[in-house]
Length: 393
Ligand SMILES: Cc1cc2nc3c(=O)[nH]c(=O)nc-3n(C[C@H](O)[C@H](O)[C@H](O)COP(=O)(O)OP(=O)(O)OC[C@H]3O[C@@H](n4cnc5c(N)ncnc54)[C@H](O)[C@@H]3O)c2cc1C
Image (cartoon, rainbow, N blue to C red; front, side):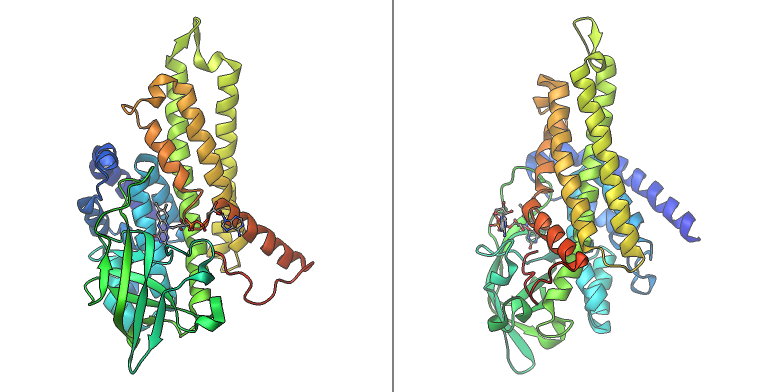
């Protein structure tokens, strides 16, 4: 199969998978706040957990744009499932894929790419969110291992993961330049998973929990990259994840628009179809424009990434624009459906709740604006930020 045929095959497989395995449970997993383990395993069986990774490590070796197209398609039906996949594939596999040793790739990456093992990326802490340099989890180097102590909060897949990617301070005095990343296996002595799952506004079919590490012994062979080299790994990983978040936002928005377009042609009030009211038409026009603009920003960022060019600013722009767009779109979609939109019989209220996370996860909107202006200043050479200043996500 050449790349074009493989891409087409992946999209057809995704469509079938969504119709058969995702759509029937999307409402239920939201209501029951249940992680759909069977759905995840099926994604692995179909190769969807390894789309952008090399065939040498059992991935499909396809472009990032194919991976994002799959995320977008999943998000149209179930944003929780899309988020589970981004947390697993982008946030958890990427650090090992890009910076891991051959041994780490064989031991941890391949089982994750095959969907046999689930990954979670554990950066956020109770006292450290946007400001990751303030993290208090530490890993002290001993003879042949690191001793990890600290806690993490709001971790997607925490309760279901087999491997955690854990950033910790290995040189606290160096702040953000003293962070290292580790692969931690879930059953390791001293690793404690939260007793109950986080109860959330949206994305309820994705698992979120917290972790505690009490003097956990991590073999030095599980250090990703070099000691104190965590910041570049985190930037590399989070920038990719922002594209995933933009794709989730686009998927939710597209489905909301589709449902609105069908409804405004059916529903009549005052002897007119809804689309004939100018104020409703304005909302539809804004939806259309917002979705198209988001798509272009995402395409631009992906093009740069695939060409090996810097794309931090463009990823933040794509994520910021798409996440603010989808919040407007889902709010207006409910408005267009009136009382029916507010009802839990329709999925629009779920899209509205799920959309909010895109403005928070992988760096809030405020942080994306900070990154954009910082990169802009750097590019324009009007100001050069001090070394190590960019501590935020
Ligand atoms: C459902 C869900 C899943 C998540 N999954 C993961 C995961 O898998 N792994 C992980 O590590 N984390 C995860 N997170 C955590 C998420 O990344 C953080 O919530 C996010 O980065 C914000 O951090 P915080 O919540 O601590 O907010 P804070 O950093 O405390 O921010 C609070 C508010 O202050 C604003 N703010 C902070 N700093 C500045 C500034 N310098 N300038 C202007 N405004 C500022 C923020 O924008 C925000 O509005 C998840 C969160 C949620 C809700």
